[in-house]
Length: 66
Image (cartoon, rainbow, N blue to C red; front, side, top):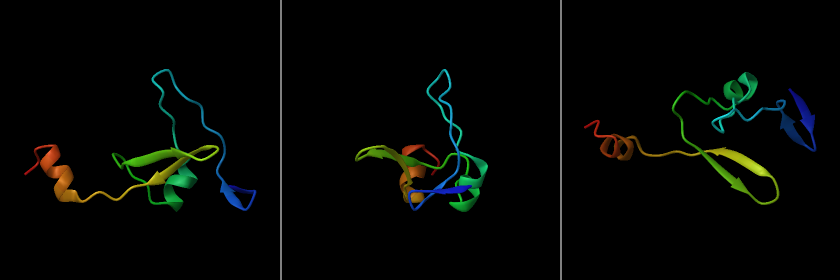
């Protein structure tokens, strides 16, 4: 992990055939990102990923896990 323009730099990722990326392990650990977590993509100038908190009850209803 390095420092790049006053932000943490975790390395590069490669987009796979199905458009998927793997978030580096160091980043997942630092930001406590787990399997099935919802992330938001956005852009001002560059692509950014951010964590989104969604209420568990909403997800349970949407996925019929009542």
